Amino acid sequence: MPYDGGATAVGAAASGETVAAVSGLGEALAQGDAVKILAVMHGERHPDAEDVPTVKEAIGEDVQFGGWGGIYAPKGLPDDVHKTLEDAVKKAVESDSYQKFQKEAGNLVIYRDSAEWTTFVGEQFDLFKDLLG
Image (cartoon, rainbow, N blue to C red):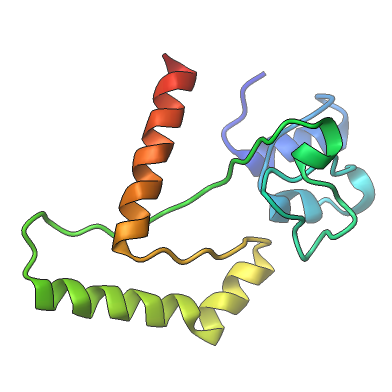
């Protein structure tokens, strides 16, 4: 059965409406003992759930998947403006308030500069193109 997001899906698993769900770790942790977290879809165990294996540890398949977002600007941005924006984003991501907010949400923060981000988005596009046909 489709749900409109991870929180709704994991809530359905907690109530017994469905037998399993995929969601963000924070959404699952918010359910307390009502759900058992089987694995995390990351290359490493999550610091907020160190006893929970990765999917690779659990079943031998390296499945990594998570939510992500980025900051975008128009093509042809002048180099000085690009550097100013990239520096500002890095500073914001590294700030205590942002780190605290993301930790409370159960999210891992992985900063990528623009070159790394461009590569990552291309890889994600290829992955989903192959998955969705």
